[in-house]
Length: 251
Image 1 (spheres, rainbow, N blue to C red):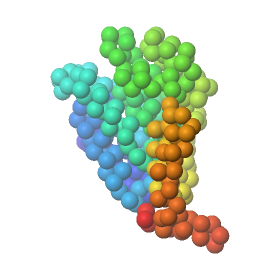
Image 2 (cartoon, rainbow, N blue to C red):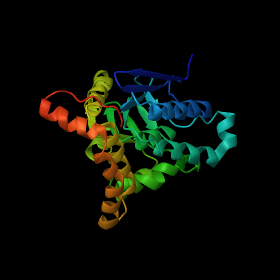
Image 3 (tube, rainbow, N blue to C red):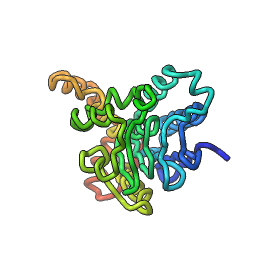
């Protein structure tokens, strides 16, 4: 049985963590996940990616603490895992279908869009073990109010799907049976847009969070200037006036 399922269909990459019942993150699963994400990033026929977990109980319940490789790798594994996830260039949607904790919480936070099953719960219990969740500690207060973020980090308590939706950590809340269809609907909308423009939007959003407006606009000009001269930009404008779907060539 493959511990990671990676499929491609209609310009969408489907990545499923497949270590039931909890889909915990072993070092080998993290390697296969990063390999699949790099393939997704490099495949010019893929425009959007959906990540989920097998079953309806767990997206990913955290790192597999019984994995000898994980224990030996320690902080080096976690830092590399976080860095690799945070540097994927294309759009990623997390379809959170259950427990989303620790390393799974990091995976979801590194995605651009998070939608959740009504049965999902999210958080980081690391502190209960006297360990530290690197990505959540660094990024969570940039995504939700600082006091709420610190309560999650300091108590180790989980956020219900309803609370995560209320504070904006997930953008949609759906019944379990509607989770993947909802993710696919978003992915299909993404696929209608120019792939290079999507990359630019993600890059600008990631890099300008703490820049001044002047520095942000300078980065905007350097990134988007070449895009305006692309064949795909001319195609997008032409298709708009001709009232037809654009045909992207990434050039």
